[in-house]
Image 1: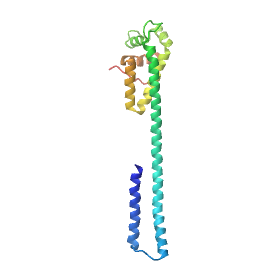
Image 2: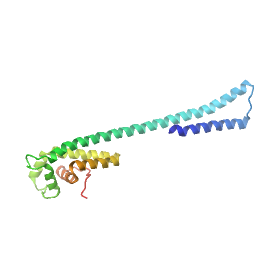
Image 3: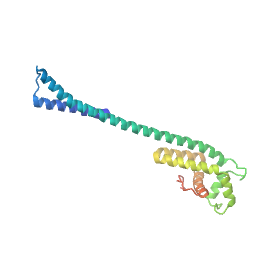
Image 4: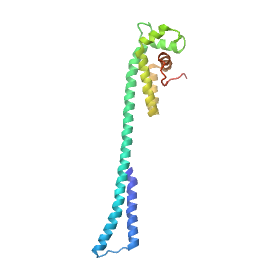
Length: 198
């Protein structure tokens, strides 16, 4: 793509130099060796400078393009790494949320939904606070997922939307909303919430 723009400029410059020379000195083949030397010196000096400048311009544009490709590749790699981490955390979190909890007697997801729906007042219940802190790894997993979602959102909106759908399908939109608010209440962290009541 870069060459496509530079080559016409080089060709136009060469023709301009030749046209200027022919206009100034005429077009005739001289038998004089010194005239040929003068022509070669003129042509080489002007065209050589144009070609050298074009080469530098081409190299600068190539470096700029390679830098952009490297940055894009690095960002793609970082996004992919976070997507893989989200999937891993989702798998572990799903088990913690939906399997019957031995202490609670019911799945953790039900407790989180009840806290979110204010059926259980988190602020007033020491038992709930102790219960959630005993299951802190689930809250940490959700906080990590939220952080990865924020990273992806800042770099690629389409991939972010895809990840929101994945998370919603894997653990349910209502549970996602409840996790956002419950984790914020339980930890006091000011993290970006990605799921809201519709």
